[in-house]
Image (tube, rainbow, N blue to C red; front, side, top):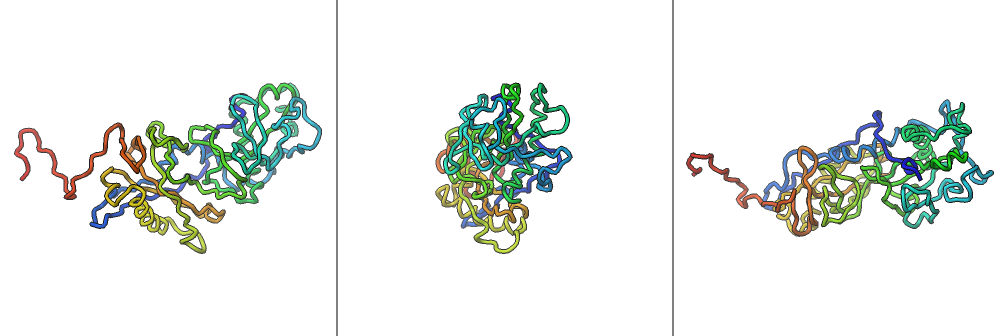
Length: 366
């Protein structure tokens, strides 16, 4: 498989930026402020995962009704040259695939109830494309052209496959697998559109279980999961908490159990999540004072109206330490001893007041 076979997710300048997230100003029983007063929004995280989120083109595109109207290929029809009887050549809408390497064509079908990397949404024959661009003897397209084809045809295919219920801010992204340079030279002009989990750096290595149409598309991780960090920004990829990471997941909160009817506004979500995440932090970290003693911050996402109406109602309570440039690097689980940017955290004075160091030559404060 060539470097273009498993698609990377590129930013779409027209994509709507994700909504922000809240930061807590929760207090201990003694009334002491546990967290900074500033807002640490989920938009900060979106900077890192924007290559994934922004690749999800708006749902206003529908079907294959462009002027280049491609046709969905019938996998049961005559085999195309170069396809043979492979998992790629026989995969049809609803099939789930795995691979061991993004650089080889070692695709294999698997039961969607088991762990898999890719769920096929459409089988598209590029030979039906008007003109000579994909005709016999044509050059294998470069990565930018495949990205254009993915955005033009695979995004509406995902929307159609899910009956219009595709969450553009959810945890699944639109992907595409092409026949590879060798298959292209042999005449294969078929691409497979699909849905998958992809990290912020474009790695298609995260497996999922179950079909997307039967899954909650909320962008959440299981409690206890730590998310990696790269250049002060989260990778959106789980890592060992003993390794450097950006933040840790404390809980999953179902807002659908609290809010009924239409989508709750962000202020109402923030009020509810502030109390919920502050409560969770005390239990998760082992005490009401643990958060401030470790100089950490709790924060969360918001759910926008479009995601809510699709059925994404869950959020994570997260714990980390934000900086102006992104996130501090944390080593170790927040439940135990941690290092922040290579140093042990220094708890603030228990009196709640900090006595500044005297200036050189000045008398110490009284």
